[in-house]
Amino acid sequence: MNRRTFLIGAAGLGTTAVAGCLGREEDRFTLRVADYNFGENDERYLEAWAMVSNVGNDPQEGTLYFTGKLEDDTIVRVRDVALEAHRTREYTVTYDVLWDDVRNFSLDVEIEPPDS
Image (cartoon, rainbow, N blue to C red; front, top):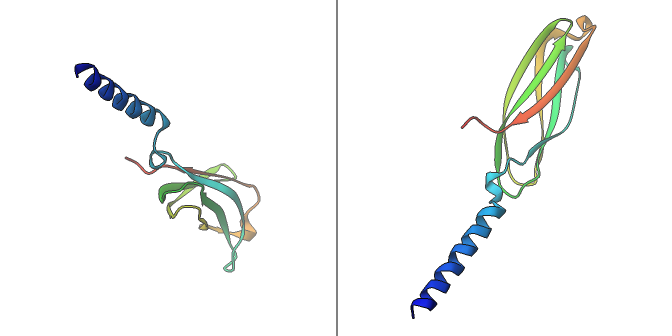
């Protein structure tokens, strides 16, 4: 009888250990920046946009960072992102710079999990 109790307990612990190793999807950050670019908006200002996709099976939230370098200045714009599973959405930011004044601009876009 003690042996049976031991084997059942050991089997339960083994199952729990394997499940823990596999991890749960909700613990993974599944938002991705699919594409980004910049250009002139309808008001003739510099605008940047990014396509963000949730490639996971659970809703996700994150923080999107648009880092623009204009001449020698770095300008960061931040957007909060919330997407349902398997959804894609475009996010835009506008810089306080007229498009005609843009001579040298580069853009980098990153997404990170929300602060815990």
